[in-house]
Length: 468
Image 1: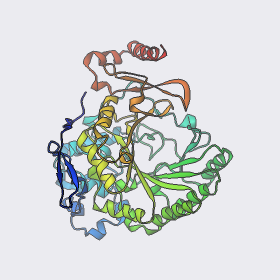
Image 2: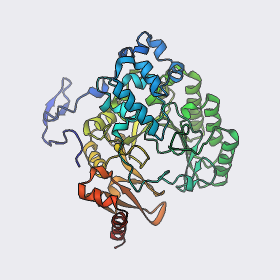
Image 3: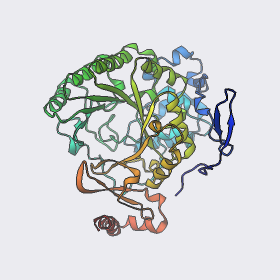
Image 4: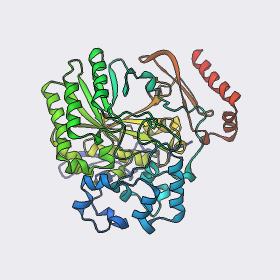
């Protein structure tokens, strides 16, 4: 296994002086290190989509247009694109949607950013439009709700795994549905193969979560997620935020949303919603508590001039924004894409916070990478910008061990594709596994994993290696 892209780094630099007399290091051997991350797309990119060709910028960039015109079926995709894709491609999408664990919902913004000359390999298409032809069999050790969130849920929609932190699932819908959602067990509509656990945005359910948080004074940090709080009304955003601020032992909380990456227009044209987030953050500062917003960009092509315009409205109001990325095969598992994403986020003053190794999720095995890919990428991007803007590369261990740095494994057999981790602060004494995609292993190892007895032997051997 090797990550894509030129990874050779030369230590040699030539030193010169700029026009102000400043001595600067100029690396003549790294032409890939340029300032292209500042070149945000600002053209009328939506006009190449037949259904949007006549729309003005004001019409296209209205968040209400974006929300009301999401692509939700393969038939609607064909109506919007018309001759922009082949009949075979449409059939591939339809078959993929029928097999997917997630409903289809794609914003006009994202649809317009896809390269329709080569959609099969486009990183945005890969994340949101399933192609049945690209599917791979799920790993035999995959389990639904692989992170074991429901087992750590004392009340509906609240996960309390880490002593001082809780995850509050405020709702179960999103503005756009990602194929790779780790909460495919609950988010979105039921699909052909999955009947979901639903967490509606009801005050009665929220009050149960608030009561639990009030009763557990060890909790200082709450993640408000879902689903996606982008779908909450402004008054709901404010109610959630101010209720948490009123709990004395809560010192910080984060609104989690993919919205800025998939529908940035809401930040530009929904004044009430932006005002609610900013107002709660301002009230938090008055109380010496931290309120931030965590978003989810995976590729630099998702970030355009309208993204910057929207995020600047949060920056204007002093809202801290951080980003969490999911590492995906064919999307950002190469040095150029990951470096470009980190630099572009930093340029917008969005702090790259985490890069997550892809969770084991049903129906998206072709998106997962090996653990080694994450390890190598982390080495390559370390130092590309200031340390506080270099994300931590982590994986969320199967079975509820929590987040572990990719370098912190107790044992990793690259040939057999199995890693073993411990989690002293969360579940001391237990062992947790990560399994590389089987199709990335050699033929002999693929055969072993296909045999149930051999599979048990591989896992037990890895477990015993750590015990010694």
